[in-house]
Image (cartoon, rainbow, N blue to C red; front, side):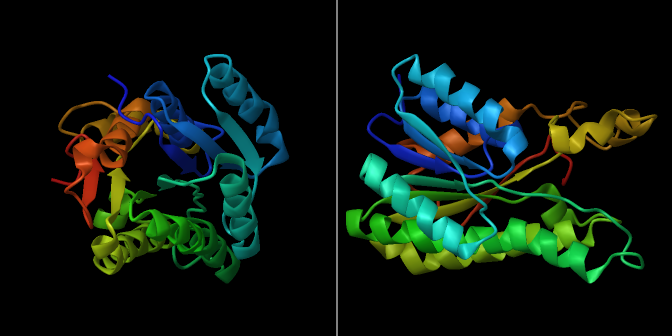
Length: 251
């Protein structure tokens, strides 16, 4: 059974990692997909994703767009509406990390992480709620992190940005619930992606694994399954919540 037929989803930062896994899961369940990527080096990978699903009859298109710039988000969503005619789901997934101890962290490092991780969620949400309000329906899913719930040494900027997403999510849910627009966040734990390749350096893997009750790192599909639940009618009475997909790390 396909859970997202006749739905159009936007996913930011989706040429790799969690974003790519979400695109794959949504496309598998029949959604039309508009996704973004930011760097030239991701263009070939984005094209491969488009080909993979367009060959299977899914309407899908990629845009090179910086989610950390308001004008770019405005243009991106405008183009999606012209191409697809509607936006039913928005997954704000774009994110970076520039870890450093607070004593050594520069204002530039702090600001760049907040710009991409937190400001982008505001920029994109502000754009997609207009067509969603008109349709009186929508699901917004913001990618937080277990670090935003727990904090972590050396990740003050990342933790602040991801904690901010949780507060933003709750506020949007309260503002737009009466319009049948739901807004939730997902807080992944350690997920095997390019961003977390450091998990396997030296003795790091064993150190992190001993703090995870399930004893393993997440796969991108684990996060995508949670996003599918929140995007579909299975999550139709859930809003303002943060679902931790972390193997029990934050118990």
